[in-house]
Image (cartoon, rainbow over all chains, first blue to last red; front, side, top):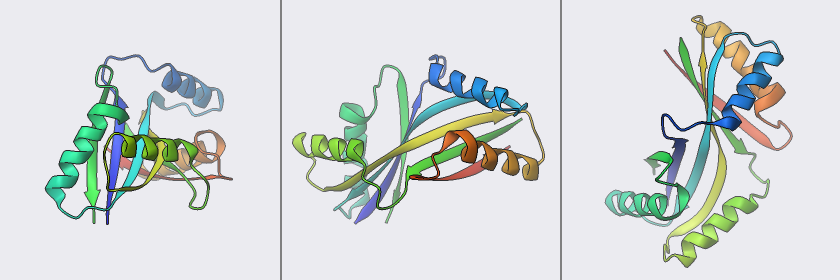
Length: 81
Length: 81
């Protein structure tokens, strides 16, 4: 059984209104040092597969087809045993 | 300038309907080894603050007050220079 942690972020240059709203809210709450906030997704997938190569191939394909929007999002992932 | 990566996950035992939907969709797309999918948030905060202690204190407070819902969510974070 493998655990894969997938991180999905907006590409640089893509506006992040949700992040901007959170940054503004933090400022209003009194946190003065906040320069920027970007919000992405953190997806943990448990897979019944042992071969690292196969896991990597499958997760890359999942990201390209379903988990991320390649037009506006980047992704990377880490595999744990 | 420090970069803080915050990970917010649903607590264990809390149902994740979004994750279940994605798991089902992956199965329907032909990925057979998927056992479980949990979806959380990945927030990157850029802060104008150098002292690691101060950053840690502030980010913990931000999570408790705004970023996470402590009733159903856990969080952890990593500080990068």
